[in-house]
Length: 282
Image 1 (cartoon, one colour):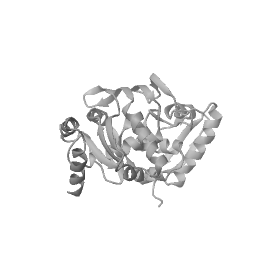
Image 2: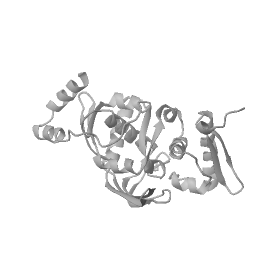
Image 3: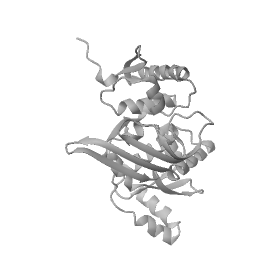
Image 4: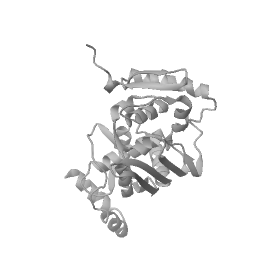
């Protein structure tokens, strides 16, 4: 009840036309639900470089750039490139949306949201959040995904932004965010529940990307180091440099008990064993 009263107070401060527009979105959210300690994410976000591993200061704007992805998934992107921080913002936005009873929108404070994604809620953190939401609403993503079903090969397609729009009040640092209802089709094509506290405990963006990638596979198959470099969107100039970062990231996943073990064979293929699939000792 208290949350509903806060939402009504927020709406009353908006122009009448804008109030009508927001209230018109009062329909059941089209995305699934999951436990509070997890975050549901469409697999295409976990099996591609859409949310890449971008070094500080190297973010760039692109126009219909082809994004590296697993076989059967085709992505083109326009806008400022997205990174793992932007992934956190989208994931937490979808989480808030999935846990409310009505509407295609969510209301939250900057402080509460930043705490939810493990970031500082000081001035720099608040400015970073607003910039990330700008990137997500200003993005244009073209996705075509083929999946195998009981009826044969099926194709899913989506074109649009990842988030629709947001409104912000400086006085109480409150956001009113409209997510894109069309994202439901991406969940229909397959999604994964990430252990959120596991992710927040990871230090490097590469470890976070690997966490999501391997979580989306029940039985990860061996993959070449160069393929992983492309799929995560790493901008390391030399493969040897990436391989060094990859080893450290995989060690981080083992330390966090996300992976039981990993190795790189003579063909430069990465083998991993997930901790939840360890064989019990007799």
